[in-house]
Structures are given as C-alpha cells and as structure tokens.
Length: 56
Image (cartoon, rainbow, N blue to C red):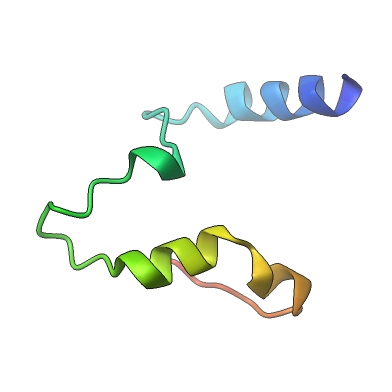
C-alpha cells in the first residue's frame, strides 16, 4: 500500500497531461509505431537485461 501511495504521489507531482496506458495505444494513427517493438518494450525485458532505453 505504501508503494502504491508513493507511486500516486509521484504521478501527481509529474503533472502528466494524459492518462496514457499501454492497452490504449492506437497503432492506426500515422506515428510510425511498430506494434511488436512497442509491446516488447512494454514487457520490460530490457530492464531485466540491464539495457538502456532512450525515447524521443
């Protein structure tokens, strides 16, 4: 419960404009998103392998 409260406090402090969720990603829009790559990154295996990720 403490972990969840800390997360919620950080999320509020970040003042994010959108409530983005992986499940709601629209791959039909012309943004050049690769569904397979997106879902692979969402699986967070890159974290377990100690790799870095730069999103621009």
